[in-house]
Amino acid sequence: MKNTKLFISALCLLLFAILISCGGAETPEVTTSEHQETEAVPEKEKTVIIAERGKGTEFQLVYGLKDDESPKAAFRLASLIKGFTDIDLERIADAQAAKEKNCEILIGAYNRPECAELTDTLKDDEYAIKVVSDGEKTKIIFAYKGELALMCAMDRFNQECLNEESGTLAVSADLDVSGSFSAQDAMIVSTLPQLRDPCILVEDGVYYAYGTRWIAFKNTSGDLRGEWEELGVVAQIPQNAETNYWAPEVHKYNGAYYMFTTYRSSVTGHRGCTIMKSDSPEGPFVEITDGHITPSDWDSIDGTFYVDPDGQPWMVFVHEWTSTDDGIGRMAAAKLSDDLTHFISEPVELFRADDPYWSKAQVTDGCWMYRTEDGQLLMLWSNSDSAGYCVGIARSADGRVDGTWTQDKDLLYSKSMAGMKYDGGHGMLFYDTDGQMYLSIHSPNNSKAGRVETPVFIPVREENGTIVWDIWKKK
Image 1: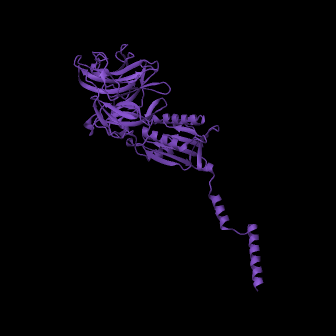
Image 2: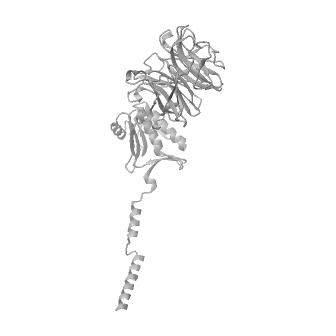
């Protein structure tokens, strides 16, 4: 009996083995494996390939004409794709599109229902990016409300789609992201006390802040949010300086530190610009010009320093509206001697306060020079738009200080960009200890806004020949 049971057991095992080898039985492992293969999605179906280096693209870029930002955004995205893949993306305005293509990127294309509907779900300063596909057509939709929201959307898209290693621009097939611009996310409201017209100098890892009344502070923490030590008044008061110790800027030049600043003279009865010198960023700064360097019968303020590509130093300054023949402020410039003690040319007028379309006042304030990587010469300066004190960008057509100046349409800072809370201006640019560029302004322009004038730092970057907010630099 025992042998019979053993024989039957062995026979059953043999038959089971035969069934397995013939596929007539399933095991848990086989079931699991087949299930995994069924659920697995090929990698190419998980993503939408926008463009691949050397392989072209099927996508068409469709933009709207309802606002001025959509064409610029389309150009920016097309430039990104061109620079990354060397592929020219076809661009077409939505109002001119004869028919839809199977692969499209819609940027502010309000004539397309899917884009208009997504836009309608947004509040001011919000954006959304969504991939919509029905198996035949694939659309990547950019929706936004506000210029800075669009900037956020563009930067978010850059983060989502760039693959440096493969040279591919691709997004997730189920991409559906949204967000909003918040000025508070980008702006650093400094811990400095009331300080108007702030100028920041970074020297040997130390931040120095100079402001009206010729007072200065230093910060050795390496952090713009760190504590500032007051140095007090760092300039020797000239004998004929009676009031209006305004807007000191400190520049390092030929191994020394020069303060370009303003005061009202008891001799001329006018405000004018002067230059002071020190061997240390902490002063004392001593006047090296013979009184005002600017014309004695002008009210001149807010002098700044610039050295052109030929090595010629200049002072750019404000010919104030209070002493012009028509009550409209001007921006002016003159060549400086090598030792910065006097002008070696007569001042020339660069532009007027009423030149830009956005100008709502007669003021020219707070000039600051910046040369772009491709050699364009820009000037930051302040006036007021419909929202209040702001920072605009002027541009020299030929790259020369004394050339022809035009006004960029886009403002660099306006109260409308900060949730309509604080106006601000008198901007200058500096780099922090990590190499991040910042715009420094005082905000608000007066204490009637409910707080005193305080230095505010906004991360910015150069892009396409201009300066824009670097909004992904978070606190």
